Image (cartoon, rainbow, N blue to C red; front, side, top):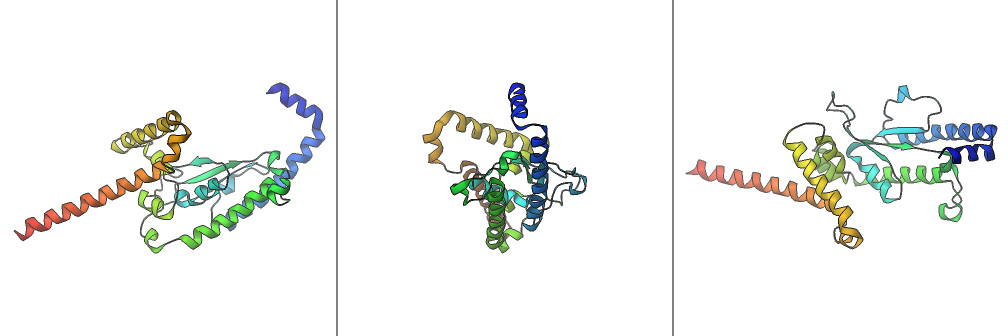
Length: 227
């Protein structure tokens, strides 16, 4: 890595690197504006260093992260953002950019750079999320599992949050995540295609099981009270 970095510096030059990273810093202002235009809050916005090529955004229920991942974009997941304030959005994503994001994609990107494609996809994903928001979803907190499922968000974030607190939740989340990732690593491509979204299916089954148990409990209670 060091040899490669020295070779790159020799080819590009100090002035060239300075120019490239200044251009990237200017583009980060566009990214920050696009994130806020999409309705997301920049994490610790007031503390971001000028010229930083890393940006983190709150993403209620992880909805936009899921939509953008389907478009081929990758992020670092953020969860348990504000443990001292449970009412705030606890989920989000972090994006770290390098000058490689300024490359021209040519025909694949319609003559746009990789960063411009991301900003375009971010705007479209935000519009889709607003159009798909349902009244039923608003009955549940975006930090809760039902809220995430009804909004079409990223349910892994909820499981990762459970790992922070000891107890039954941590044990259940550990079991699910271990089974999931063990299956993904050991089962191969063919088996993975059998379940397109196994974690979502498991979460829905868990929610349905809880609702069924509540319904049975209410029915038994009604029978006992009538007798």
